[in-house]
Structures are given as C-alpha cells and as structure tokens.
Image 1 (cartoon, one colour):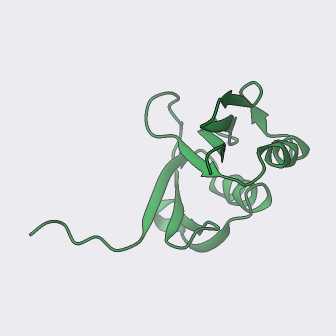
Image 2: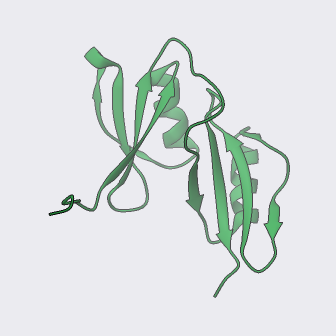
Image 3: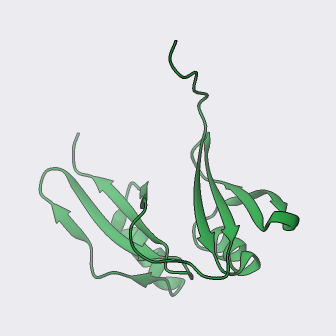
Length: 123
C-alpha cells in the first residue's frame, strides 16, 4: 500500500524575525496567521488556496540559494507586480515570458527567500 496523503501541504521557510515576517506575509500576500508556537519559533499561515499553508521557522540566519521556490499562480501578473512594487518588495528583474506557456516574476521576502508569481498563458 502506498502513502495515504491528505489534501494539505505546508511550505516551510526560514526567517530571521517572526514578527516582521508574519506582518509581511499578511500585508503583502494576504495570508492569515493560523497559529504561533513561540517556544519553538514557528508559525503557520493559511494561503488563498485550501490546504496550502506556509510555515515560518525563526532562525539566526537564512541561507540563500538552493531549495524549493514557492510559485504563486495569479490571474493578472501585471497587477501582481504593481501590488508587490507598491509594498516595496524586492523584485528580481522584470516579468519574464515563455511564449504560449507562462509569465513569471521572481520576488523576495524580507529574508531573501525567493518566490515567484506565475500567470498561465495556456487555455
């Protein structure tokens, strides 16, 4: 018998300041704090997608490079870029287009965790 998955995933990321990061994820991405466990420097936040959460783990430093990149699909990447820019979010260049497939925009949280917005060009 294979693994018995439930429809839930938590993307865990390291941050250096839990208070600052909770505020950023709420204000910029609109996520909601589910719970916070101060004794272990951890919190989980719900996203706009049922069953998809973000876990933030407070660490002294956040290594850059490698690891997974969370890609958040949006219906209008231009509006997404404007929203991120209005919040002073660091972008990694401009929107990249892969013809007939997808448009992508890389951005960073306050600790340098890379994420992307994606807009499908299919369908």
